[in-house]
Length: 156
Image 1 (spheres, rainbow, N blue to C red):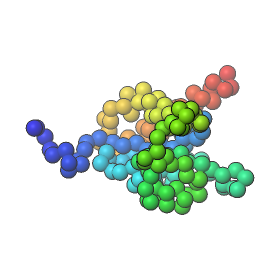
Image 2 (cartoon, rainbow, N blue to C red; image 1 turned 60 degrees about the vertical axis):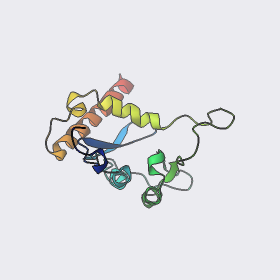
Image 3 (cartoon, rainbow, N blue to C red; image 1 turned 180 degrees about the horizontal axis):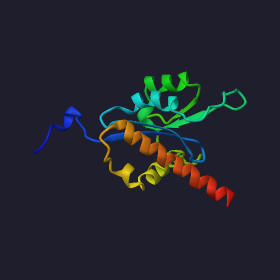
């Protein structure tokens, strides 16, 4: 075997944490090394929201949908501290209902679609920047281009 031991978690690369609205518009993006666990990025991602967030009310709560990786006490606590209603799939829960019917549409595909669209930018797909702040700036620029294209389609 060539290279470092795979159990030491010395992974090369970058992990992107993205927060999007229900329609898929990117609101926040955070960058970290690939060996950082997702729950540590969860606390930083809502703090990185660019626009002012409206206050959640009992009539209109703000929901946050997360995957199984956040089903731990740290994930639930972080979501509660930021004022969101958590929708975290339990680790041992099946994807479909027992009668094989989907009750709700898949929500995680919205984020995966935005990450795929961001990957179309070559400087985002392959990280050429040495500094994390420069790479984060490119990600934010790519997110602003997604918003620009979205508004352009609505207006014209």
